[in-house]
Amino acid sequence: MTTLYDTLGVPANATDDEIKRAYRKAAMKWHPDRNHGAEEGVARAAFQEIKDAYAILSDAAQRKIYDQVYAEQMRGWEAQLARQRQAEAKREAAVRAADEAAYAEMVSVAIRFADEGHNRDVLFGVLLGRQCEPRRAAQIADSVAALQASRRERAQADMAADSTDATDAADAADAAASSGASARAAAASVQQEDSAHNPRGHRANQPNRANQPNYAKRDEPAADAHPAGTLSSLWFQFLNGLRF
Image (tube, rainbow, N blue to C red; front, side, top):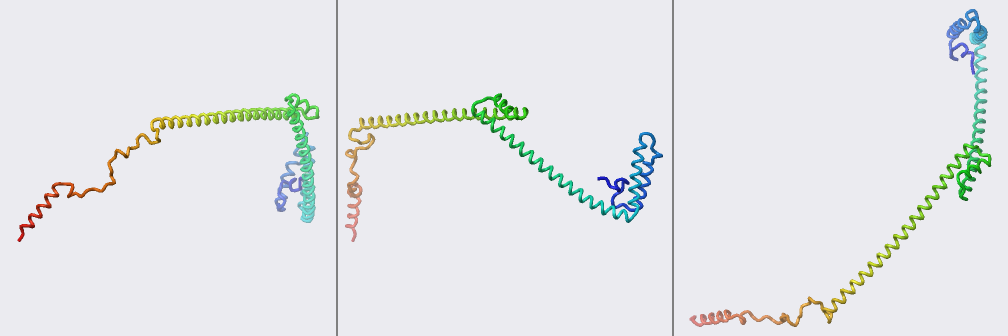
């Protein structure tokens, strides 16, 4: 919104001297005598606007009234602009919501037909038949077809993994059973061999106590068992007999 201040090229708080200097400069630029030919009409209109602006702003009373009116107009214009922007935002939101709902509906239709086993071309044709824009129909058909293919591949991979796990588990069980049977057979063989070598159940390396010396007997006195002890005892008796 152009103001009288904009026409003269000064700020709204310009002084009287600044307004006067700006008027003289603009008047010299747009005076009809300085503009001839095709620019004369534009110059006359601009010069007249400059004169009207200066007539109001150079008068203190008229400038005050203009500032008040202009301020009120500006508030009204800003309020109107705000209402217009708010209404435009609501319209855009409504359009966007409707577009998202339509898109979601088309995607749902495409997924339903894809689950029934139809390929991408069928999905594209169904969407076109429902008044879907061609570019969007192609985008939805491509996306849904790719999603469906990915789901099938994942399901096949899961089935293969489950089958592999079941086979591994069965092999492990068979191996464990075979190992257990082998261990039991080896234990039975060892037991039979031990029984053959030891009929009474004794271990082969167990010593025979019947052939061992009797360690329970009391040890004889050392003096009775050795002759030197006897001679020593007699010698001390002989010496005792020689004493006075």
